[in-house]
Length: 208
Image 1 (tube, helix red, strand yellow):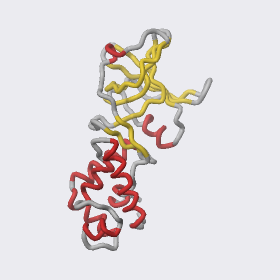
Image 2 (image 1 turned 30 degrees about the horizontal axis):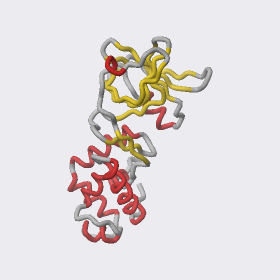
Image 3 (image 1 turned 30 degrees about the vertical axis):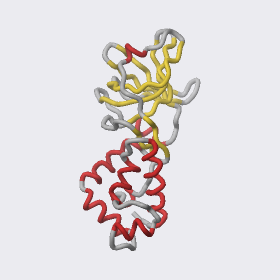
């Protein structure tokens, strides 16, 4: 059964990642056998993800940026994390952030985070597939009046003001609260939005 709009909007991210400015590999590429540090890259998928078992279970993805080829390696084994990698298609443009390494001339990024291409500042990380969640929330926020009405219908409150007061949230807009948690411009705003959404979720009991 498809999740309700209210459930989607009232599931706060578990944490957030501050995205670095996108860079070109050629400008930040580390010297041999050195870690360049955390970078954020836009890259193109070359082939579907490959699952390896030896010496340690992992998922590898081949990508490129211009003339540079990179191998992305993740050891995260949660079903939704693996599903994100498996869902990437050759030719797809993706955004990744992690530590860029250069071992024997081979460029690696180990356990990077996948982020949506249209996320500019703070990437919200959800309990389940974050890329899917980002897309679902984007759709809901495109029709805010309908989506807010769904949240109100799931509560015992008739107005936004009544709902915010019942949850102990000091704000004049439910939409502002939801945007702060799901589309924050800073980590400070993200923290406030996360707490507020968790309060709303605790107050409203949703089925479906």
